[in-house]
Amino acid sequence: MKKFIYVLPLLLALGILFACSNKKANDEKKGPEPTAMDTVKRGEYLVTIMGCHDCHSPKNVTPQGATLITDRLLSGYQADKPAAKPTGSCVKNGWALITMDLTTAAGPWGQSFSANLTSDQTGIGNWTLENFTRAVKEGKFKGLEGSRILLPPMPWQNFAVIEDDDLHAIYAYLKSTKPINNVVPAPIPPTELGIK
Image (cartoon, rainbow, N blue to C red; front, side, top):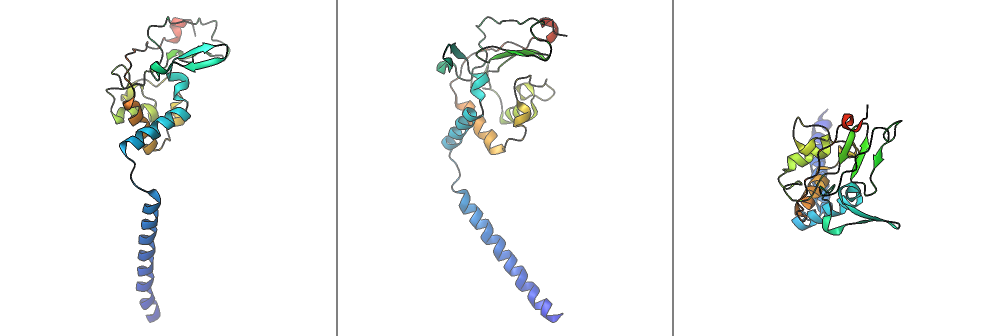
């Protein structure tokens, strides 16, 4: 029993020493804190690889495929574009429709239009990080509590588990984008399209 009493403080000291050295090693692995510019660059990278441009950036569609309209990046469905309204007979038997530039889609939910994500007030210019987090992780329209759920094809359910650092980087990048004034149309309910 006496040997145990003498060994216990030694074991505690070794445990504390090990924990401290482990923390120091982990801190050294992390490297320096990212700058604001590093965060924006990371956000731009994430927006690109996560496919945000696929739906939120208008495109020119040619026989060779779609190309982004670079001066309208991330501005969503263009308000000055005539809205093709599909009929209910087009959306049936489990089918959904999407335009060639992927900025509007119709299905059992009605017709949805991709949002303006630029830093303009018609985009996310007046959103807080809390609004952005609620929109991305909880699928809430404009990130407002009690608002409707974001409609398909927005895959917010996939983003519900996004790391906070990545979410902050995306937000920082979007807030740094060129503001583009574009008021995206409101969704069209299924009944107005003749979808039952």
